[in-house]
Image (cartoon, rainbow over all chains, first blue to last red; front, side, top):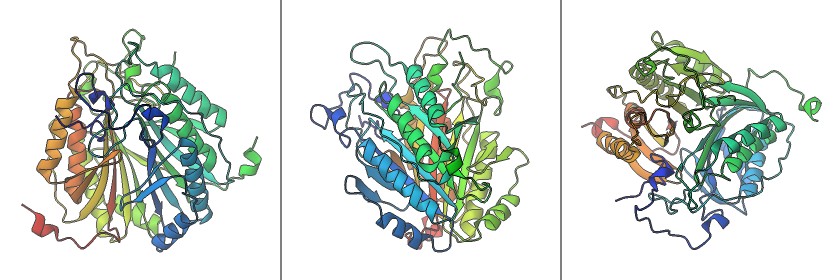
Length: 239
Length: 239
């Protein structure tokens, strides 16, 4: 049987015990970001006639020495350590905001299910614990909508079910601590604030839930320089 | 305890038995699209200097008489019957493609978890079965990346666990039938074809998995009129 656990059309719960998945990575995959499938797909839509030049120029100035990057026509994949991902995403968000063009930045985070057609990690390989990286403030404002999905709901090797709610409340509390939480709308949580804080909120929530669940994805859409945003003086908001 | 099951920072598995959720809708919520939380959030990023005029004009020509719509600065929410959603999305995708501008269209589908701050449907209210609506071909080409998430993994009222895999394979087979399936990349399934077929693939997969699972979300990003797309004669692809 084809294992489609890495495919988006499957939850990691498809990696059920006894389905005969052979782990394709060596012992301790949770210790290696790429072995654990830690990465993001981003789509940066610059709403300007010369979007291509602006995007290429913006990307060329980012330090991606610690990341794997593959560019496609729908999105760009970046893989690597969580702290490097947050740094790169914050640099990207700041650079896009500084163009002063209206930009829709879509960020799709995933952990715990690496591979191409097949998921190369069986259930129970994780979760992976990593320190939540520090945010970096940019002085640029964003509004955003955020969805966070704990998948891989199976009972762990020691027979206990993961406590999603504990981790989810931790993620919400973290968003409140960062000052980005604005409430819930249909299907999403509304975030607002410094681009760096908004990105850090999503990364942290994804990592905090990832302490109890192997396969966690998150989708964040940021709006930068929207004509409907009032002028915001982030300096006055800084605590 | 606040029920955050409707929040994106929660899986519907939070609607665990015994947590005391009071259903806020009358009997048979699965029969009512809005009662069941059937809807989408879309972000249409037109990569042109006059993006605002183009988007407003495009939206003004769509028939939304059968849908609820709320426009925000990050995305637009539409709620209603699955068939009306697909019709509206197909009209939108075609209209955006006909502008000849490069557009990134992000579609976030959700079912089984209505509400604002709180999820108003307890686990076990669904799943909702509905006929997969007919696709409409537009003559316009799109590439896309697709993620599909069955949530609400709890055992149903009759004590049986939902069979995700059966439904997921049905979704994949349906994508192959529509001719849009191109394989898997990191975290997503690659789709290509007529805008109408690509949207119908995502809608159908989401509905097919929704036959066995109450809470199902799906995220689709389409690229229209990409400079990296070769000229495609969709008429010759039509079967």
